[in-house]
Each structure stands twice: as structure tokens, then as C-alpha cells.
Length: 303
Image (tube, rainbow, N blue to C red):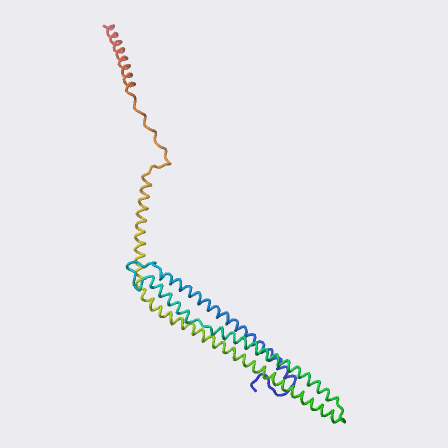
């Protein structure tokens, strides 16, 4: 009674319900196929994400195995190599714990069940149509049998009964196939939804459990991080002071240099040569004597 198609009697309403249920089953089956393909893609993406996380962990591990940052005073559990090694191990554990092939396996099973269910419904529908045609043909033949021929009537009755039984059997198998497939598809969708939630929850919980262990270690790195931050600030302060001092020296050096834009002063004249100075002095003396003689003559005249 709770099935979509009830096997009560053949009628136009029954055939209409069969066609409607067949379309519904095809729609549910298509939805299940799309979900299975999407689930397979999600599984592949999860595997790729795990591979990318493993590669990320390998880079941390490479730093941890190198000598970067491992000075004489940094060989403890809070040194850069030890921290990177811990991060690499934690990431690998987190991704390894969440990676599973159950999703891909179930997606393959869903796809194979979908093909089997589709084949069953298709064959049941073909069988029903064949038996329906046989039943109609047998019924027409039975109407053409002469009543006075007992042997013909008996054969017609047997043929009619056989074709009617085959028709009802095919009708029953069609109803069973459609009802069971429709119920199975709904159950399949519910299982996919439930299993998807469970698997994603297990994936993230497993990864979170590993990462919580790593987070507990990360709290121990806080003093080292603060120390490194303080050392960096002090180094930046010293570098800023040195940079300002060098800039001041550079400015002073530029101010002491002559300005190339101003014209240079003329050069001083060279000193006179000694011979030229002596000759000139003689001339002056001679002139003075001549002037003195003249003055004397003048004075004599006055006397």
C-alpha cells in the first residue's frame, strides 16, 4: 500500500502511474549518478590536498634538516631546525590520518548499482510491453474462435490463460522493479548524505587531533619568537642609528666641497722680476736729479 505503484489491476491509471514512476526513478538515478561523480571528484581533491600538504611538510622538513638558523646558542627544542621538523611531522600526521579511499570505493559501488538498477527497470518494461502485445493478440484470437469447435475453444482458453498469466507476471515484475529501484535510490541518497558527513567529520577530526598536539608544541615556541622579535627590533634600531650617522657624515662632506656652480676667482698676478725692478729705480733717480738741477738754476736766477 505504501509503494508508489500498487499491483491491483491493469488500467489506464495504472499505466500512467507506471510511466510517471519510471521517469521519477530515472531522475533519482541521475541525481545519484551526479552525486557519485561529485563525491569522486571530492575524494580526488582531498587526495591532491593531502599530497600538497605532504609537499608543504617536506619543505619544512628540508629547513629542519639544514643548518639554517642553528647557531651555537640555538641547538635546543626552540631552534628553527627543531621547530620546522616538528611542524613537518605534525602536518604529515594530520593529512595521513584524514586520507581515506573509502569515498572512492563507495562511489564506484554506487555507480555499479545504478547501472544494474537501470538495466533491471529497462528489461522489465520491455518484457511488460511484449507480454501486453501477446495478451492483446491472444484475446483477439479467442474472440474469433468458433464456439461449436470444442478443441479450438480449449486451445484458445489455454493460450489466453497462458498469455494472461505472462502478462500479469510481467506487470508484477515491472511494479516490483520500479518500486524497489525507487526505494533503493532514496535509500542510496540518504546513505550518501550520511556517509559523506561521517567521513568529512572523521577527516577533519583526525587532522584536528594531530594539529592540537602540534599547537601544544607551538605554545612552547612563544618565548623564542618574542626573543627573536626583540633581537630584530634592536638590530633595526642599531641599523637606523648607523644609517643616520652615515647620512650626516655624507651631508657634511658635500657641504665642505666648493660649489661648482659659482665662477672660480681670477688667479693672482705673478711677482715682478728683480732686473725689471732695478732698471726702473735708476730711471726714477735720474729724473730726480734733473729736477733738482732745474730747481737750483731757478734759485740762482732769483738771486
